[in-house]
Length: 307
Ligand code: PMV
Image (cartoon, rainbow, N blue to C red):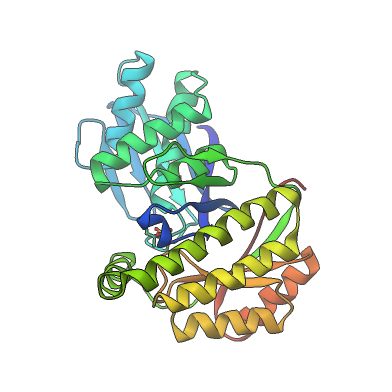
């Protein structure tokens, strides 16, 4: 057995949907929910054993991101195929906008490079994961692999190099799950239709979201949690206006706000899925988490920034 390595999940804090139209977005790591990988020696080359989905991938398979990634790691480091099984398990729900795909790939990359005795830098891991995701998922934006490899907040504009930045304090979050499976593809195409119908109005909303994202970034850097909360509320109102909220999301947001949240919004594609709320302190965070779970929803507590 070779020690465990991990990678965090992520959520989008500001700018989802507007980012499709060239506006900035901010994503943050979810350090409490991670993908883990650990390796053991084998007799027959490299196998990636994805325990949660009960599937095994060999190095030569070319239609999955793990094999493609392992091939690139070996090519980059000039090693031959090792006799190794990399076991993989993840606490991140799949297809929930929490970065499960990039987090599991990052964990595999870390496990393999650790076995080889090679120290890969965060930017190298991020690029390797991005390239593997491109082959398998078509056109990933690059935000997930960056925020996950660096485990830092990321400011992102489509087509530009993502930039990491430092929060001015620790921010306490609660993620609430509506339990409604939502398709990002569907909400993205709904927004596209609304934009085609009323481009002037929608562009106005996107401009507003851009202002919020910029202010949100400054507030995170300044450690101004009240301002971050305000910006989250405003961002949610605009996401409602562009047509991607859901009554269950609004209900969760009300529960969080009633329990003392500084701000709350849907996160990711919307139309169901998750909302994220901000708490001033760890004990406030617990209170909001309790209110959401007592109302019958699944919730997670996480924080980002220095402790
Ligand atoms: O649900 P996630 O985290 O995959 O985010 C979707 C974000 C959108 O802006 C709605 C779509 C996109 O491709 O950026």
